[in-house]
Length: 382
Image (cartoon, rainbow, N blue to C red):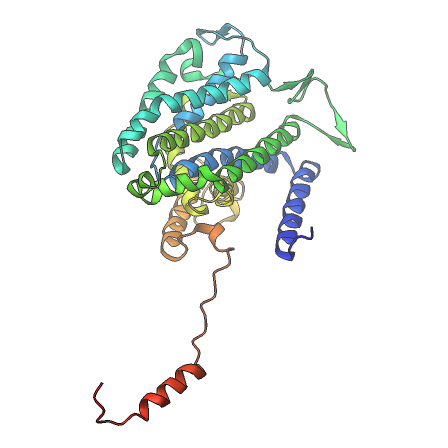
């Protein structure tokens, strides 16, 4: 069976992107590798939020909470009991791969516990309820010292596969094709594999029957219920799936940081994720990835090139810092997208159907009918 040219070119472009992504650790410095790792982790979380908010239409301001559940869940499942700073911490000491799976499932269970609330609330009220999760999570992370380590956070156990750790050690100074693979290079391929799997699962979900049902729930819950869609079940399913994606992103962030503190999982992180899906395109998997790259990479670029940019000063200086400048810029990007590109950055590449050109010719049958009527006697009575 021969593929259409457009489909073939799309697959060719995807293969080229994957090859380029796989080759990047051989050419990029640690700064760009770290930036790419943050972008891939953010893309996983943005895909989950887009399923919830973009496809199903449920506003969530608590996405950072589920990232924290995944991060701290992984550290608890994989960590050993001991002492961190002035606090005793507990851990189960499970293998890191098992801890990763359990942390993702834990985030899904927490999302499922909250899903009945999401089934009863709509719009702004649901957003306020999810916002409460962020404040509750901050309080728990700071005070649950035995699990989170308190203010000082907790160190994450490195990922390990059959004795091969994704850090600078075990084996030390490991090289492949003449390039020394450190922690960032090793984590790069783990993040890339997880991102590819996450994209494929999300696309299959949204293109199948569940995706059509979620879209129907977003457009009109009454119409969806009339068509036989169990609205409450699909709203709960969207929350669980979104939470699991966030939990996976949280695990990846814990591996990248090496040590996680509660301050990171605040309201600002949830707002960043909303910006990602709005800028990239609501309801689009590719849009979530593009928006995540835009929002994540921009502050890193401002921080790296602060001395060369006008009106931007280095962190800690008097003036507009890199983080503030980046927020101003993608805040303006949100306004521009909403005004001129409602489909987001991903929507700019979609083909718009061409409107049919109006024809000036009158069909022959209509013209003959018109002539026959015009030749009838004017005084004829029907």
